Length: 252
Image (tube, rainbow, N blue to C red; front, side, top):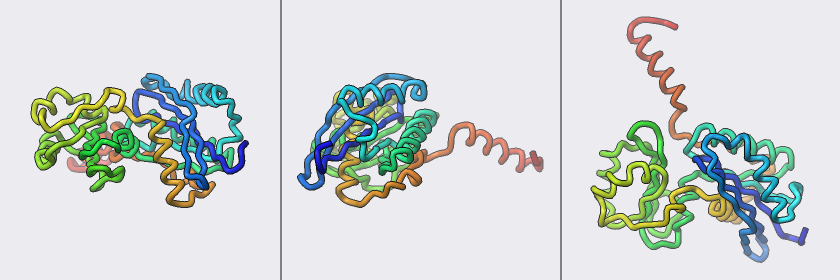
């Protein structure tokens, strides 16, 4: 391996797509290069195809698994199943190779895709019902201007009314695209369809930035967990049932 060249395997499994990317970088030269990427629409089949897809991409670049110096993974929010599969795989691989694992929220991965466009960004990630996970980013920033939150559509519309022009993106936007456009047609700037989905090549850029700005331990995998913003649907339903039964004086 060329001296001082580091190599990152990046894994994004927060949605219906499986997105992978390989990138190399040198902190001394401040260089970053995307080497290869792939994206597959897999639905809920991340677990059956993730390992083989990583091996295929490594082979495509003639990289040995032991050459990888860093791992990047999307922490969500998004698909509970996809996130568990991707993060569990990345944690196990980082532990095995004794290398750093960097987790990046899906919001920041999406924001990086359009970071060069000079306007505010609203990133909407789909969830159950008519609620949406939302992240607001100022013009030119890849960091959120406020904590990520869950909004109903009426709550979201009140926030959007205060923003003159914006890019609205994410699978949450695509789900409610017709309705949102009917309310804010002149305010919304269009982007390509693929930019609405988190892509591992932008995850790689986020990982590189984090490595540049802070030292990352080989034991960092211990702290990388799914970023859910809300508990799984089954847990919410169980909590609701228990609350109702306690209210009626029943103990399960």
